[in-house]
Image (tube, rainbow, N blue to C red; front, side):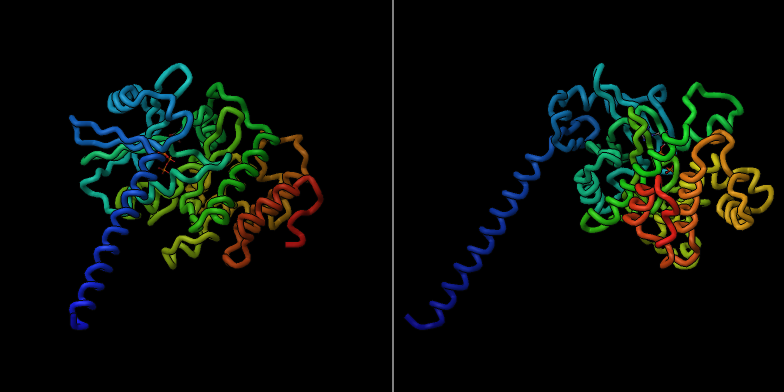
Length: 359
Ligand SMILES: Nc1ncnc2c1ncn2[C@@H]1O[C@H](COP(=O)(O)OP(=O)(O)OP(=O)(O)O)[C@@H](O)[C@H]1O
């Protein structure tokens, strides 16, 4: 036999082996993916529900979950935002979820959509709201989250002021506000430093900090700004993010960065300290905003003047340390801002004197 047929034989064998190995790897990956997920298809609407396996999800019957999800109506609404409406999905006496309906369906979305959701589903941290699964249909998508019984920090801090009446919610005292600050900082630091690839939240604000049954902070909506595409949906935002929380450099560059998240977190700290909204009407009337106002007043060393009246009598050294941390997060120059890991450390050391002096 000549050399050419032998070479052709080996090339054919190698190609077949390559194709077979590709198929085997794909089958194994698919089986592994299926082991981690529960998939329910809805023959009627052509939708597909994917739930990430966990003891809680496995204890539910698939049919009931899918049927109840598809039956959500206006009476189940618990809130709404720039991305869509949030519903309460009660499965049984002990299990409920928060379902976010995104007004964008599979017909409109790109191929990275489900991959992004898979990444979001893998993130588990005590200060981050868990994504349990999703439902995709041609006209809309649903994201199925852990339900946070105490709603958002925004509601807790501002609704009483807004409505001029008590909403029958407990007032957030200083220890609770401090706990929320540390918890939220830990959640964001986890996204920034422990996730691979690192995750920039892009929309840190008090309505994206939810409170669990123990009033522990849980960061929500991470990844949504990327998922939805900046220009597509977000009514309250300029590009991605929310006015009043955006770092100044964002208006020039349009680029979301880790240090941009640090700035937005600084604004949340100011909300906790002053009890005021970043774009409060009183600021708009004066052509200013929370950050500018606080910076101006604190420069005159009149911190107590901007402090939320509801915090009167609280340990002033702790409060003044948190003010210092907020102000360093709000530095105009991004490189002068600490990382979120450093913010966590400073907040944890808050009980000691002058935590920002060494920064
Ligand atoms: N997992 C959840 N558990 C309980 N309530 C939630 C949950 N997710 C959202 N909510 C409620 O729904 C409201 C609307 O949330 P959503 O994230 O859609 O909008 P937002 O954060 O207020 O604004 P934006 O869409 O601009 O970020 C929240 O303020 C909160 O009260």
